[in-house]
Image (cartoon, rainbow, N blue to C red):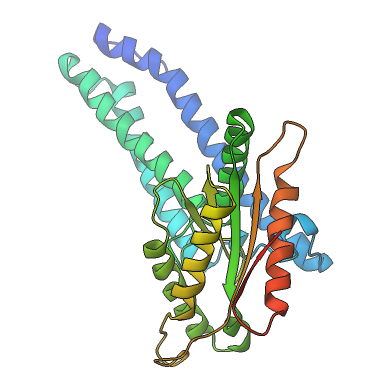
Length: 285
């Protein structure tokens, strides 16, 4: 930041204080950008190697890819962030703000910038198609809930599920419509605010249920099976058609030495067994 001269004392104090704030903001945005780049690089490596690791549930993490729409949205948010930072710096460095107004105006600019940072953070964890959390957001939430359940010695349940008919549809637009319909149904079928829904991979979804044992997880899984099985999607799933829903469930009370990835893989293995069945089914790990 350039040297400030002939600036009211109050403005100078605010400017000096802003140095640390600016550095914190730069560090935050740097971490967010690094995360976005890391996700794209990891996806590219998986595609090149044809790798489907077990800890990714045997599926390529499609939600980690940033498509054209996501990139444009990310750039828009970044531009707002940069504009706000530039306004703040200009006001402070030029001393063109009245002394009595400096703190208030600086706070307004800082709050606007903070909102942009939060918007970017939320953006990086959101699936642009369905509006649900993406895999990155799910993984972060899983770690949070796993640590909490370990501390409280409470149950944690994970439900992984999907519509089998998705794989039989080769029309991209119709597949997108199906995913949106599924997400809309999930939002209404998951009742508790503490439960967490995510687009787990391309056509698979996950519901993380804190403080929920086998009985509660079974109720949620059966509700998902019924409501998704009756979801109507024009042009794909006609009226009065009940289609196959496959669901895998894992219920566990975490111990300090255990890893959440094992818990996740158990739910995925149960999901794969459910997909082998001829009819809609719920399989517990």
